[in-house]
Amino acid sequence: MKNSKYLFQLILVWLCCLVASNAFAVTYYCEATKKVDPNGEFSKEKIKKWKYANKLEDMGDKAFISRCSFSSIANRVTCDRYKVDHIERSAILNPETLIYDLYIKKYYY
Image (cartoon, rainbow, N blue to C red; front, top):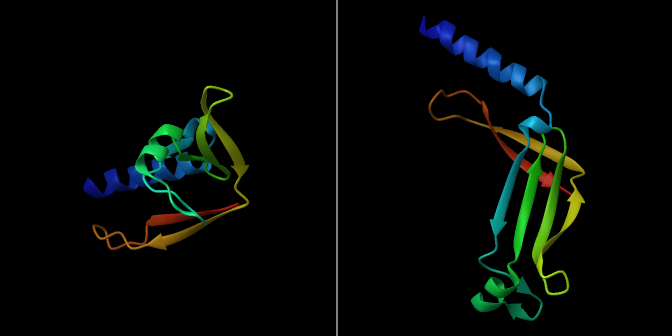
């Protein structure tokens, strides 16, 4: 019974991957805690004031990366959005199952 439950879950995940669409999109929004430019490191106050962040929108076979910050002209956070050219998936060993069924994704734009 346990094996059939595992097989059913595996088939369900596989089917979900086959029909991946925007319904399965994942968005990660990461606020910056450190920012550096050629003149040095930004102060914590400047980072907080300008609300620097990065956003990753993963839609399975395509993705977008955005750089965000506060715009005094728009009086809100705005983002520059870039289409990812290539997504690289590297399999890693799952320590619980000892199967290479986990992945690290790298996004190139």
